[in-house]
Image 1 (spheres, rainbow, N blue to C red):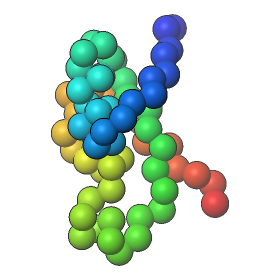
Image 2 (image 1 turned 90 degrees about the vertical axis):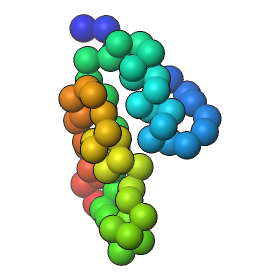
Image 3 (image 1 turned 60 degrees about the vertical axis):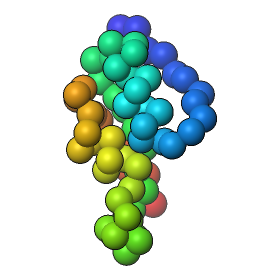
Length: 64
């Protein structure tokens, strides 16, 4: 298995999706926090990645 990490700047979900496409990634692994009311109104970054990704997405939540 070949895993890589990348440090990007810009809009989170756009940068993640664009980089995954450019690299030909098979899967995106992204962390997520417990949603707050504002996330339901605006949409969390992880949720946008899940909705718009061509790749499979593994969302990992913190234990707390």
